[in-house]
Amino acid sequence: MGRTIPIENQNYGILNTSKQSFHQKLNRHLRIQEEMGYLLPMVREVRDDHPKMSVRKIYRMIRPKTIGRDRFEAFCFEHGFQVIVSKNYRRTTNSLGVTRFPNLVTGLKISRPNQVWVSDITYFELAGKWCYLTFIIDIYARTIIGFTASRELCAEQTSLPALKMAIRFRKSSYHKVTGVIFHSDGGGQYHSKEFLKLTRMNYIKNSTAYDVYENPIAERVNSIMKNEYLIPYGVDSFESLQKLLPKAVSLYNYVRPHGSLLFDAPSVFENKFNKNKRNRIQKKVNIY
Image: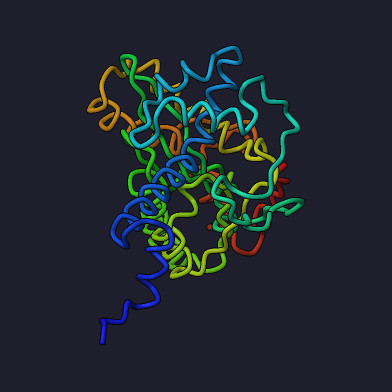
């Protein structure tokens, strides 16, 4: 009597491949899709800054590790980057085809700290190479509560360490982060398993902008940090960026006056809220 071949292995035979080969190809495909999810917000930001830059030049600047030039160009063309992206470009799924989180902040009035955090990832060019800055901001007083600089776009170097910092910082001040809304543009870094696990563990609610340009406060902070601090500092290496970024964040949080905060620094404005428990400053802000 001949040996019976398991049904599972028979299926691989039908596909004319081995189980090992099939899963190697599948894992590579998933890695590529994951990196594409990371790249889309970055390509969009480059096009905003350089409307006429070709996709091929963008590829040479970003230098993604797992995606070749032709695949990268096809991916960009698929998402409308062969021409200038119009401001009303909208999408409801991320690049992996996964339904995005609902937008929990449209029309929401911000009346206290630890109500809504927003986050974005921006690029920073150093000697013709790119690194990345991730910021998490508490909307109420525009306080930067989490940040990181990285050479790669993966969640492990961007959104995840920034979120861990934000949680530690806010728990030290408010003892908990339960119920906080975490709002982002829905890039792949905000959908990684470890990132979502961390938000679930801390009862943080994920929220996604339906329009790719619906994260103006985070984008404004990106611009301030780059153009008012890091570029004037003359940052010329990744090591100096890592050294000077905490200084820039500290000056932004504790010294720089904000017109939207009655010309207080974020920390001063937030401290006023915490000290005046009976007559708290009712600063209500629309996200959009």
